[in-house]
Length: 448
Image (cartoon, rainbow, N blue to C red; front, side):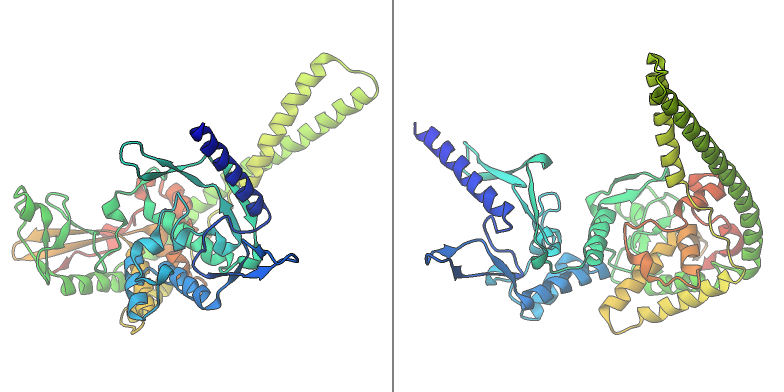
């Protein structure tokens, strides 16, 4: 009887909380950024569940989201908040888990949907482990979640929220050569400690070139496993300087880029004709189907109904829906390349190089992220007493940066598709040729 009473009491409590949430009131607890509103009703009873924005804490929430989008890790954000003397929720010190939380469970500053005016309740439940006696969280099905819009409690705008979600998704997934995404290993989700961390590879074994001392980079396989004979080292500062120089001077040679523009234009014209022909044919078929549907409907209205007409109408409506979706999703032809794009690219990279020297941390982090997006791989090859650096760039990222009307900022919005991604895979003829095709032509091997 005691167990039945407790179960019935729990059900009644949940029903009561659900009713409060559906009225836009809190189902329990106080999120960071809000105050509990204390007021009484006409009978002198306390009104529970009302919340109001705490402007001081709300500004801290906005700062956390802006810093995260700028490229700072939750751990670094927490350290800076503690250094500034800003108390965490509950009055203790900030930790990275307070900020990062758990995206699936909706906990943590970065995952609280209340900041965009959505109150979500019953996302998870807690059960008691019979062996340990501790509570364990279990996710409820999406169909059991209760969501109520409370625009008066919105702290963030949609752009800031969506950019954060996109960046979280980009850290979790990485793009595979076939264009799909797969989950990143947890090591790959860490932010790079140095400008080109994780991009350098040994040409002898394919292993990574990592820091082997405070200043030197070397082949990890040779040091850790002894199965590679490459013992050549290079200073990190000199390595970064040579790669940045290659990005500025070699990656977009104007003469070779003009040849690429000519070939790109020819391929683009072919794709335009194929795309235009497919769209024209779809529009013609759609018009023909509309006429057939109209004729069939008129016949039925005149009393000429036959069971076969229903089957024919179902087929026509199904095909019409397919054509409408095809025309809606049809891609625009890829943009033409301007002959002076190589010049625009060099100007943009020069600005990024200047930004790396900036006093502001956010500016340096953003510039470093954009520069990393231009490089797909750096291969180091030992040659006598020197190292040769082979730089390979991402074609889509380079061309996006090269557009005169486009600033580097969009490249930092992780998870947002770049405008050239799928188009240049088609032009190249194979998805594994997304890397810059003219590398051997105008990215020289540079003596270290």
